[in-house]
Image (cartoon, rainbow, N blue to C red):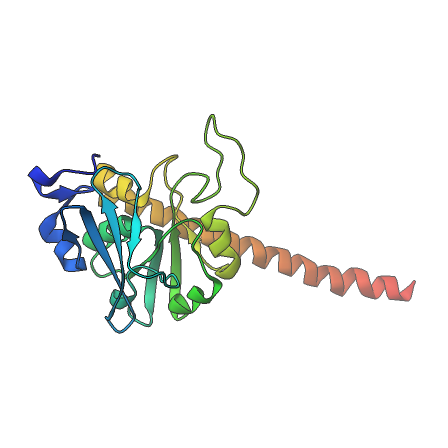
Length: 224
C-alpha cells in the first residue's frame, strides 16, 4: 500500500473521515498522528512522511514514550487487546468499536510499567506482527533472532496471562482485518482462547501430579 494516496483521500487503507476520529490530520509533509495522555491532553505528534523516508519521525522536543490510544482506554473491563503500532489500533477500533485497544508504538518501545494500564482487565490479548520483531518467530530466509527479543516475549514477561493471537507469517493486525476481514480475526482470537485454556489445564495437571508425588513419594522416602 503506497504511503501517498492523497487523491483517494485514504492512508494505510483508511478514509480521512475514519482517521479524523483519532485526531489524525493530512498535512503537506505527511500524515500527522497525535498521541494524547490518559486525560486527553496532547502529548506529542508523530509524522509519517509521504515519501516513506524516514518511515516516521516525532515532531517537537523529545519526550518519554507513551502507548498509543491511552485517551480511549477505559480503566478496566472484560477484554483488551495490545497491538503493535498506530494503524493496527485504528483497524481494531474500527472493526470492533466496543473492544478497548492499546497500541505499542514499536517493537522495542515496551516499558514494564505499562502493564498497569491493562491490569484490571480479565482477558488481555497480544496481537503483534507475525515476524521476528513482533512475536519472535523465524521467517523463511531470515536469520534467527535471540530468544525473547520479539515484542511478544517482552510483553509476556510482564503480562504472563496474555493470550497470544498468532497472526499469519509476515502479516500485522491491520493486514488481517483489511485483507481477510473481521471473521478471520475472530477465528484467531478463538484460537488464542483455546491455547490459553490448554495452557491453564496443562499447568493444573502438572500441579496435581506434583501434589500427588509429594503425598506418596516423599512420605515413603522419609520412612526409608
